[in-house]
Length: 443
Ligand SMILES: *[C@@H]1O[C@H](CO)[C@@H](O)[C@H](O)[C@H]1NC(C)=O
Ligand SMILES: *[C@@H]1O[C@H](CO)[C@@H](O)[C@H](O)[C@H]1NC(C)=O
Image (cartoon, rainbow, N blue to C red; front, side):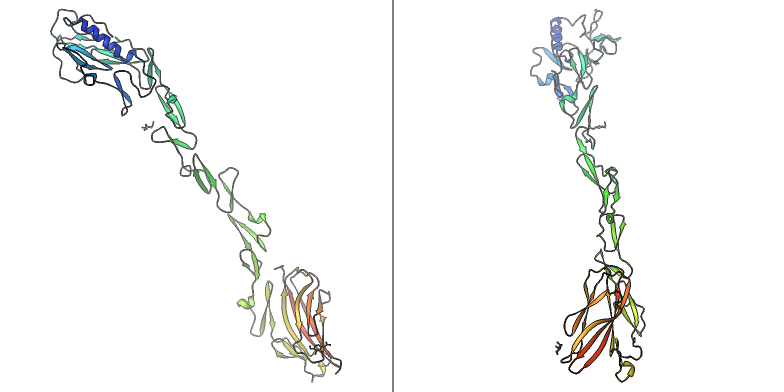
C-alpha cells in the first residue's frame, strides 16, 4: 500500500478508514485456506474458470457504505468514497472520470494516482515502475489507484511467500500423481492411459494397438494375453506360437502313418487302403469298386492291400470245368482213378501277425451220404506246418493258422476231404484248393 501525501478536503479520516478496509481485505495479507477450491475473503471460487473471482461487495453487501459515501468495488474488497470524490478508471465502466480540479498541492490526486499534463489524475502503474513490494515469488497486478501481489496459478500464499500447491495431496489422480511447480500431472500404470479428463486412467486395448501376439490376442483390464490357434502352443515368450507335433505325442494317433502339419496332423494309409474315420486304414476292395484291371476271362480276387486276376477256367487235364470254380475228373477217364474226383478253387486273405492259433477257414461237406464218414487233411501247400486241420464233426472241419505269419506272402493249400463208407468199402476224395493271401500289414 502506497503512502499518500494529500487528500481531498475534509476526508483525512475517510482515507484512513479506507486504508484499514483495504488492508483487512487484501489477499496479500491473508493466507489462502488449505483447500484448492476455496478463495480468500473478497473472492469466490469460479468452477468454470477454475480461478478465484472477485466479489462485487457493492452489489452483494446491503449498505456497504453508509451515509454520503459511495461504494467502489475493488479486487478483494471495496472502497467507500465521498460522493464528491473523483473516481479514476472506474472498474465498472461508468464512463470517463470527471476531471480533477486543479490544485495548488504538488500532487493533488488520491493515493495511487498522479496528475498528468492536463492536470487530471491518472493511475500509477506501480508494477511497471517497480513501486511495489511484491516478493519475487509473487505476481504484481496493477489496479486503479493501487496494485495487488498475487500468487501464480498453482501457488498459494504461506506467510509472505507463494508456495507451490502440492495438488497430489488432494487425490486428483486415479493412479499416480506427479507434482510440478505450479501444476501437477497424472500418470497411469502400464496398460492404462489417461482419460479425457487427464485424471482418470482407462484400460488400453493392446490388441487394437498392435500387441505382438502372433495368432490371437485377448485384451484384459490393464494387460493382454496371447493365445494360439488349435494345434499350436504358446512359446515361452508369451507371444509367438509354434506348431504342436501331434505325431510325437502318441503312436496310436494313426493306424499306419502320422504326418504332422501346421496346426494339425493327418493319418495316411499304405497303397491299397483308404482312410476310415481319420485314423484307421481299410482295405480297398478293388474288385467291388471296379478299380481292377481283370479281363472278361478272369475273376477278380481281392485281398488285404491289393487284388489278383485269376483265370476263370483253372482246370488242367484230366480235369474239366463244370462251374466257375469247380473242376471235375470224369470217372470214365482212367487217369482219374487215383485223383481226387473234384477240385474246387477258393481264395481268402488274412492280415499279418495274427495271434495264433486262429481259425481261418471252415470246410463243410456239401453232400452227406448215409453211413459215410468224412475225414479232412491238408494234402499240399503246408510244408512248414503253418496250418493244421481241426475236425469239428463228421461233415466239417476248421483250418487253423498255427504260427504268426508275416506278409506279403501267399499259400496254396489243398484241403482234402476223404469220404469213406466201410460197409460198402467206398472211398472218395475231393480237394478244396484254397489260396491264402497274407497282407503286408496287421490291418
Ligand atoms: C489434457 O491434457 C492435454 C495435454 O496436456 C490438454 O490438451 C487437454 O486440454 C487436457 N484436457 C483436460 C480435460 O484438461
Ligand atoms: C456221419 O454223419 C452222417 C450224417 O449225419 C451219418 O449218417 C453217419 O453215420 C456218420 N458216420 C459216423 C461214422 O459217425
